[in-house]
Image (tube, rainbow, N blue to C red; front, side, top):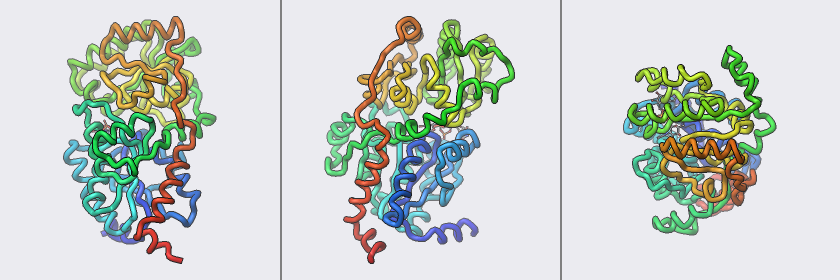
Length: 395
Ligand code: UD1
């Protein structure tokens, strides 16, 4: 009942912006800020699906990135992909009906992205996809399915790298809707870099030992959460052994995703890391803590998509623990090297970084901090052509 009243109180909107999971937050922040600058020209509401809900996975990002409080939070939480996606769809449909937007805007490739895009497309509400056209060509990744389908449902597609346009056209997407605008995640990085928290302060906050007094001699930053890496012990165990081998060369700092934490604890594999002298485990970090950790690191080991881009923007060598990437520009132009789960390759790249600094890389075209402004400007022009927007904004 209360929820119903809250929905009706939302009123009509020009655009509904959707977020759900951690990697969405740094993408939506500059878009909300740019839309706010447009004042009365656009009424944008923020809908949170609640896919991520822990303070460390959610609240810290809203605070650090000054994202406005969501106008509505569906509170969906964790479940199987089917249940989670279906619950988001069920929760989102009445919001869409009540607010009658001219478009919805989704970012990235998480379950919240496809769930809301599907609801809107079925109701003939145009979908705008930020970070369109990225492909790993690996359909075992849930995100790959989400990317392909969201792009098929989208009217406006904003891309982060040049190759994305060709891929979208190959998949039959109309070229008219595709706009290469740069990378909103890098907008956020540039905006927040001065506020990044020093690693020593983060370690002091979360740890009680002083094993890392020699941190200034360098460290590797590790993240690991892809189902393909962590869900199967037969994969995870050798991967952890490789990490221990890395830690014999330089300290490893490991903020542990809740999914990975649960698996480490339930399988007993946590013991592998606990017995290594030089691996320090932390809870999931806030954005400014993570940015500070990344910026000062010697190298990053990760299976995240976002970190591949952020390290390229920062010029920090990145070793990607996956067989592929949907972000090829980070390999072709940036600092990223794909090693998969090959321990020998991983250690060879670590040694190369330690001896010669590794790949220098350069910043990709349009990763200049202005992507959200470009998106806003294109969006405003497009809105003027939409009858529902014209009707709402009649003088
Ligand atoms: C999701 C995204 C992934 C993204 C990642 C970043 C999809 C398909 N996957 O994966 O693309 O890289 O977010 O984190 O959308 N959990 C908590 N607290 C939370 C959220 C999750 O404890 O706030 C735990 C739960 O046990 C949950 C598990 O993490 O079952 C997985 O969460 P889920 O949202 O299903 O996927 P992620 O692995 O986080």
